Length: 115
Image: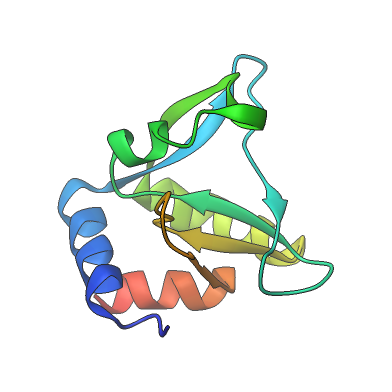
């Protein structure tokens, strides 16, 4: 699965149209970051293009979390460098019934900006 497949293209189009993305946050302000399924010793912050899909992940160990919007410009300007420094990958628009894409934070930002 490559980052330029149809679902990824749709994800990028939705992000740039709405200028926000969604992640999971609990009442204490903590964001979901989990172990990578693809890379050993790596963490992933999953993000989604819409609240509905993000909310579908608020079950089991993430049941105390809810979907929270993040301004796309803020994410690119303020979050990406910190995530990159911490070695945290971006989990792109994960679906409940499919494997998700995991990208390096800088690569993710470049693909979004280039769109």
